[in-house]
Length: 287
Image (cartoon, rainbow, N blue to C red; front, side, top):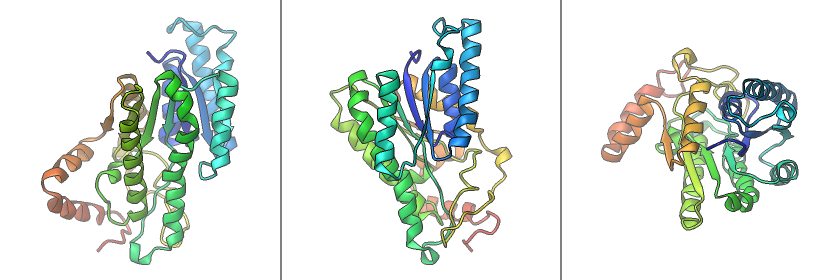
């Protein structure tokens, strides 16, 4: 089903975004990768070209010839907090491939600090990247995706279903994305638009290293043992499968699914469980 689909992925220079780009490429898609760091995007592009070349040689998808395997990717430097950058991303994609089938709004940043200690600029930055980045890209891609009866994906978090302590800005932005995309789905109920809300749960990526602390500086290192988490590659497989099956919602990890389920029936119990779980992080601001 995904052969030759044109996919845009924001935040594609590392983590889940990079893994998703590679997984879509393995499924025969034409992949547009976007992020702020052009140098990292070039590395990802080389990986995607290698995948396309391997597919061409094996003939496993019976569609990529060796002559066009180098024409299956596009790199666009894009800061999703800038509306004009997002518009340019869409225009460059249509200019090269003539269409858009799938948009994966993956670009995002996190934070770790109690709200009482937090510089409000941190919340603004999280909303700009996580929420407004999703809104800008979706706004300009939507007409093309509607033409193709395609897919819009929002990568949120379990924090988009249940507030996480010391993550006020992060949870707020993810709740906002959920509400935005849920409404968009209903508005286009008769247009066969596929909207998928994707919540990975704890996944090994660099998002915790890049997370902001109370004064807006970067945390610099993850407070968790990521070797025990779901890998970005496994997460990406679930994302691609969800798009292929046109699922409305995908929640990953046992803990993530359990938390969302329990919160429907016993939210105060979940409050206590969450608090006790999150305060065990090294140097946690929770006591």
